[in-house]
Image 1: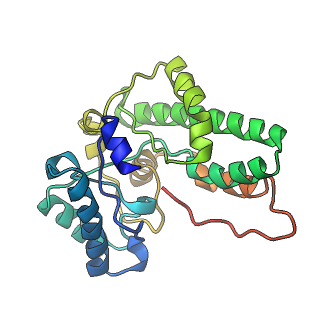
Image 2: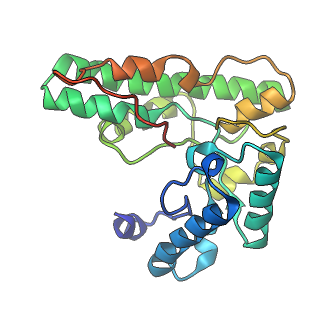
Amino acid sequence: ILRRWREAGHPLGNHTYSHANLNQMSLSDYFADLEHGEEILKNLEPDAGLWKVFRYPFLYEGDTIEKRDDVRKYLREHGYVKAEVSIDADDWAFNAPFSRCTEQNDVVSLTQLHQKFVDGHVEELRRMRELGRRLVHREVRQILLLHIGAADADAIEDLLTAYEREGVKWIDLQRALADEYYRLDTGAPARFGAAFPYRVAKARAVQVGAPIFARDLEDELERTCPARGAARALPSRGD
């Protein structure tokens, strides 16, 4: 999959090897996992300058000041740029119900999931554009988080078209990260991960609605096309 991604002209970055949870492991283990991810990247792209971008799994940047600062120092010293996220609409959480509804041939629910996926992402785009204007009094460059998944593949064309109708023009990650917006202070470490604008708003005591994962979406999706004859545990939050 990664080779096909590169052949299509898209860049790669480091997300650790095993989607490591910084809040539940030592720094040495976290760095070892990150470096294990580098081994794969080096085989796919010998020029490290093309993949020295790091996104924290779960958007967890450390639950203590020490962890947060030590990882930031490590990334700087090893030439990494941090890949922020400004729009996170829980796309990953649609994949399990999409698969269940597909297995059950529930066309009505699949149609509803598709529309909810697109509508939710458009709503979050609007929320983050408005919050960006409140924080820095101008339009900011947004960074949309998406995953490889069945629900994403099903909705991607309609999602991109819907964003374009909102006036979105597509740019690459490096150009987005060049926006000074992403130099704002995100304040004290948090136990849970959240998109960049929410963290800045909290640090500045700016009132804003809850992130999407705190708006009962995941519970609602878990109830969609429930597995027959078995209870299902809510999956761990992805990013």
